[in-house]
Length: 596
Ligand SMILES: [Ca+2]
Ligand SMILES: [Ca+2]
Image (spheres, helix red, strand yellow):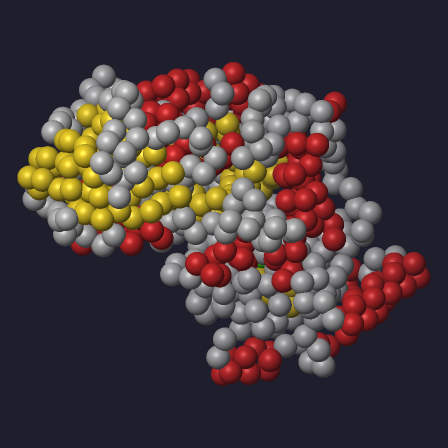
C-alpha cells in the first residue's frame, strides 16, 4: 500500500480511534501488546454488558460487538440426529477426484414452463450430467431468497444479494425440491455444493433493515460509520453509502445494494456458521464461498486481513471438518473464490498451513488465460503452472475452469471461434491434475449471448437443449470430447492426482508431459502430447517417457492412429493442427477410450 493512500485513510479514521489501529481479530500476529489490548477490550465489553446490557448506540466501527452466547433463531447443531441426505462412502479428499459441473440455476433447465430454470429441472438432468457429460459433482449458483428477482432472460437474477439464507428462492422451487435433488444426486454417487455468500447481504435482508433502524439487536451487524471512509479494496472510489434512516454510512464495496456484514460482531460470526451447518446438515457436500478476500476489514487494509483468515480457519475447524467426526456425516469441503491474478504466493495463503488448514480448494483465476496462451500463442506455461497447491497442506487442491459466470473470460466457444482450438483448450482443461469446473453450456460450445447486454448477463443465458440433443449421440462432437476425456480422467488417477513432469520433444511447438500419481503402484503412467501449432506435424518423438518399450494409446484427436514406441521414446506420427494424444506409458494393454 502506498503512503499517500495510507495518509488519506488515516485522516478519515474516526476520532475515537486515532490513537490506535485495532487488530483484535489477529491471532496470527501474536504479541503481548495485542493480547493486552484484546483483554482490555473484552473487559470493557463485559463491563458494558453486565452494567447496562448491550448498548447498541455505543457501537463504533471495528469494535468487537455482540453476545458471545448468541444462538441463531434457526440454530442447528452437527449431530447424527440432525443429518439427512448425507453422501455415503466418500473419501476425505473426494474433491480431488471429482469433475464439477457449474450450474447457473436460472438458466439451466426449466421444469415448470415459466421460463426460469429451477431445482427440479436440475434433478431431471442428473443423468445428463453424470452419464452424457461425465461429471460427478455440481456447484449450484446462489439458490437462496434474494432481492433482485425476475424469471425472464433479460433479468440478471444473480442471487448474491441474499434476503434470507434459510429460504430457497421461490422462483427455483422449495426446500423439499432441494432435498430431492440431494437425495437423487447422492443415489447416483454425485456430490452437490451450494454457493455461500457470507461477506454481504441484500439491503432488503431483515437483518440490514433492523440494523439501519437499530432494532432487534442488529445495530452492529453491519459496518456503520458517521463519515464515508476511503476504503477501496477493488479500486472503486465510492464504497460507503448514506442511510438516511440511520443518518450513518454503511460499507458496501460490491454494490450499494449489498452491504458488508460486520464479522467483528460475534453474533454475525455464529449466524453465518449456522447457515453453513443448516445446509450441510441437509446433505450438501460442501460450499463454494464467495468473495473470501474481503470478509473482515482493518482501517488500513481491506483484503487478506488476519481477521478474514481467522474466521475461515474457524469455519473449517468448527463446521467443515466436524462432519467427518459425526456418525452418519460425510466429509465436507469448501472451495474459495479468492479472485487473485498473477500472485500465487498471495493466493496460496488461503490454503492455510498444515496445522491450521483453511480452504481445501482455491480457484485458479489464471488458468483460463494460461490455456488461451497455450492454444493461441504456443505458451507452454499452463502445463507447469497449475500444480501449485502446497504439498505441506494435506489435501490442498486447485480448481480450474475455462470460464464461469463472471467476467473472467468469454465462453470458450466465443473466445476461440476456431473449433480445433476450442477442442484443444477443452482437452488441456481436462488433462491436468486440477479439479475441473465445467460451466454449463461450455460442453456444447454455447457462445456468449449478448442479446440482453454485453456484461455478465451474456454468460448467463439459457442452456441450449436443442444443441445438446444433436450432440448427445455423436462421439465426434464437443460434448463427445468432454465425455470421452472425462472418462479417461476417471480411469487414471495419474491424471487426477499426478504430478507433472515436462518431457523432451524434437519439434518446437509440440509439448509433452508425464503425469504420475505418487500413490499409484501400477506400472503405467500417463503421457499427454499437445501440438500447439496451427499446422499438422508429420512426426514427433517424445523422449524420457518411462515407457520401457511399452505404451498404449488411450485417447487422441483425429483418429489418433500412427505411433510407435522404442525404449523410453514414443514417436507420434501425423498429429494434426492443435491435436493431442494421451498414452499410458509402461503398458501395452490399455484400451483406447476416445479417438476423435
Ligand atoms: Ca421453472
Ligand atoms: Ca467484508
